[in-house]
Length: 273
Ligand SMILES: [Cu+2]
Image (cartoon, rainbow, N blue to C red; front, side, top):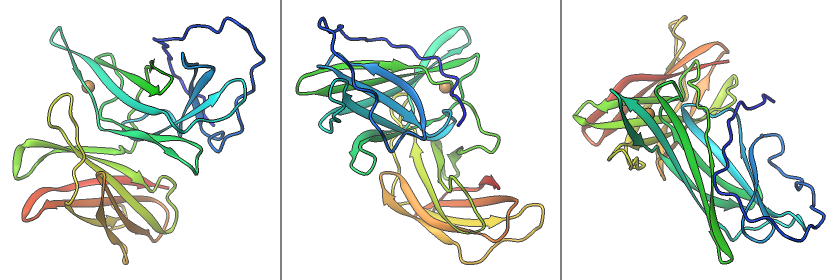
């Protein structure tokens, strides 16, 4: 697994426990094949937070897992609340401005024995702008905030599309590719997330749109049969399936409508395997 090139900044740390006790090692975890991006003591009892991501943060839909455990007993907690607050600080013409990005706030997953959430980074980190993310936590024994500064890269084949609505040029949309993450020959789950921009501080999900997909191999001039158009599942997610009849470079062309109003046609996700 690639080592993450993170610059981690802990902003709020904890009062140190005055009495030293033997600490349990980080518990065995279903997340252990992912990248540990932050591990920190909290100011709540002897609890620690371990934060994992699947890969280096990128422009698009990034899953985030938070494991909460007692550093003495190793026992895991499921009664905490988390709020992720990603914020980009950008320089524009000598002045500083900020904007956030779409977020799925973490909820406890029994399967992963950890909190599962997501952040859709809409721009890469650059000389012009940097990301910081507050991770606020609370339970009935206390609260606090950790912060880290992900270095967000743009993938060679972008995992996020953005455009203005064809029928309302004041409305901006973002479409993130969620699946397939590991494409293969044959039928693949195809899932996207759709978001809009209400303000610099609000990027809500958009449900109930009509999405049509048309995969093609641009170098060979053919498509594929038996694709299933993604259907709105709530929470901005749309699920269908795509048929890649051979390996190589595919374009999955999207047409997105809101009732009779065209939102976009002509954008595609490039997927190569
Ligand atoms: Cu930005």
